[in-house]
Image (cartoon, rainbow, N blue to C red; front, side, top):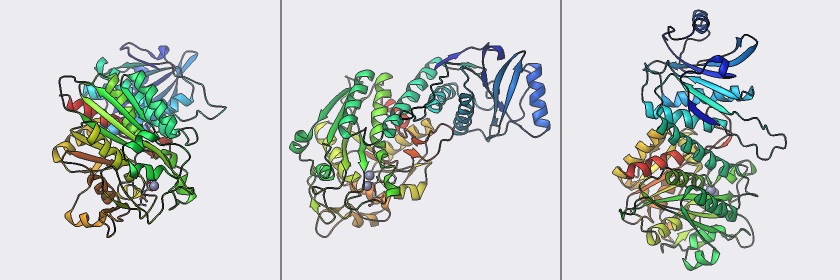
Length: 487
Ligand code: BES
Ligand code: ZN
Ligand code: ZN
């Protein structure tokens, strides 16, 4: 799909069009026939430009027709970028189903209510690319229809931001496609291979550490989770040197369970069906590294994924085991399904001891409790540092992804302790907080942010910018974080 600015596109140039209309819209700039239709729709209360409103019709041009969708932009009070993303995404899918090849987008009505040129330009490119994606690689009758070009007019679009949005949209889609790969196809070995290839394409270095290297590093917590599987674990280390002059380095850690059966604390089937998605954190950091490298962000970043499967066999780790960890702390295994934090703490120890990072962020599909707390529309965050948290908070805002910071009260600190070991991996309620605090116990004296994306990493339904399955949550916020740190 090629996206370009063409202030002069006409109905006869396109076979599909999306026209944004604000409330109390000024019709004087629109051609007579179009303004007459809009006036009638308004009079009949069929479409008034309100937020969440849309109206689809077929527009006749002599013997040709254009599939047309009006989307409501609301007014200065009601308009939000997230709403625009959602409405544009839905309209785009409606038109794609009608097999259009050339789409015209007219946003002249937006200017009077929202005029952030860079944000809107980025949003448009991201949204078109994100809503173009669906996971149909395995369908023999998959639709081969491709929308060839999008023509933009009516807004002072910023070309650099359109280009940035295109990279961010594609990075998000790459992350989604990783998350959506079934676990029989995306093993830890395959994930490592795909990260290596992506690094080569985008411009970051990838080193893969194999079983023997992981043993030599004493990553016992990571290895304990992996033990039950016949697939070997892989430690994926990605490095990007964006600023040779700086000795500062951002560390990213993504949970990379290519499958989580729960282990001997086995999950019920219904909860297991989506557990190929338990590497959404890995998708987020790999996708973000791609965007950071392609945009040439001037920040040094290292990302680490401890990739493995949580399976059942005679070799599996067991409830009641007491294991060690790379950081040296002993851990009581109360539940083998609380495996993510075990892989993460060794990755967090590794990145601090061997990659020289000054701050560390981990991102993971970690707890069902995060879904209970915040549903599917916000990620849960914990942090030991207000300044680092506020940079991450702003990065989420820039990406129009929701997050909510959870408290770390002193009273909770007892919960992760165990009478027979230094820590327990299943401290119980509040589950999202105790899981995050377990990771915090392995963070040395550096700023740390933990992001639980269990609710946001995948969706049951296609809607707006989201396709069914992986969402690529975190890719764009992590990119904006790295970009901010370059300033
Ligand atoms: N991968 C799951 C968390 C999860 C649940 C992600 C639902 C997405 C959707 C994680 O490994 C897990 O099973 N966590 C347990 C922890 C508990 C046993 C302490 C949970 O949340 O139930
Ligand atoms: Zn689990
Ligand atoms: Zn898991």
